[in-house]
Image (tube, rainbow, N blue to C red; front, side, top):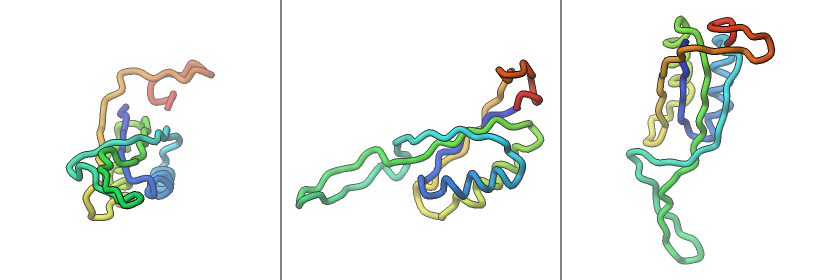
Length: 112
């Protein structure tokens, strides 16, 4: 089992959710986050004063999936989240040692 964490631009959330749903991912967790990478934020003009926006709004999407679906999920996310502009985001894959569904007590892949 793997946990896929994707950090993407907020307006891509619905596209990523639909792409994951289309390949059979049954559940995702979404968190609104702020951060920066290589783009290092940007400057904005507000009432004639210039200020730096260091942390840009992003969306963190997490999905626990079986090992067999990892590559398919990565391709689905890249396919819809890529704008070919700086700040498109990142995808992180981490291993899940154990999972338990609270309602039924199911464990492992059955819990996903």
